Structures are given as structure tokens and as C-alpha cells.
Length: 140
Image (cartoon, rainbow, N blue to C red; front, side, top):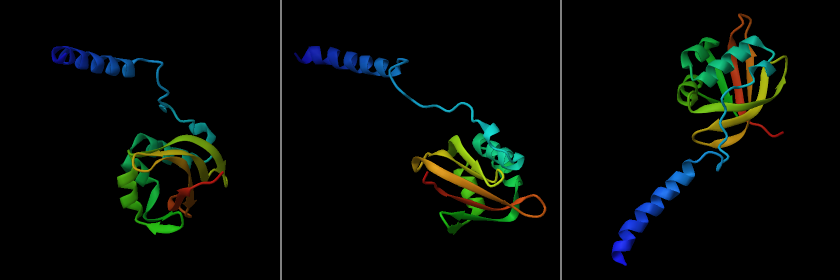
């Protein structure tokens, strides 16, 4: 019996791994392309495209040097947030766009916090750069 277990256990493990790798057996949601056309403000669209691509330098280029971040109404360090979150957080869908294209709402994925609905509200200064970003969990 012991000799049979030495043979059976590896075979069972191999079968289990092979079944998991088969196509059609799972519903893994992968986002390959975002619908950027829903965003009517070209600067917001370009900033979100940079965010989605994980391009921190491009993302930061849309903001003033002293840009403020409010996360669910609480101040946070904008640059620290940007460098830590980009590449680990992303929109999985854009559901609503409001306020002349400056406010976007959508489904969001964070490697740390999971999946949830969120908003990003961009505020422009007179020079056409974003000076404030409000983010948070959305309820809609």
C-alpha cells in the first residue's frame, strides 16, 4: 500500500495542476483594454491612460508640484500615493463621467485592497494643470 501512495500522490497532484490550467474551467476576469473614450476631458483621459499603463512620470506631469490629494476626504501625500499605487492599482471599468469630464467613477482593482467602486475627481488650476485630486470609495 505504501508503494502505491508514492505513485498515486504525484499523479493526483499532476492531474489537479493540469485541470487548473485548462482553458474554459475558470472565470478569471482580465482587463486588456480600457474604454478611454468615455472620458470627455482630454487631460483626464491622458492622465488615466498614464495611470493604467503604470507610467508614474507621465502621470505626475499632469499635476502641479504641490498637488493635493484627498482620500475619502482625508489629506494624503500625493507623490507618495502616486509612486506607491501606480502599477498596483487600476480601473477595471469606467462607469460614469461627470462635471465636464473631471469626475470619473468606475470599478477599481488594488493589489492590496481588492476590488471596489471608486471615484477620481480632478481639479484644474488656471494654467491647465491638476492641482488637486480627490479619490475615494464610491456608492452607486
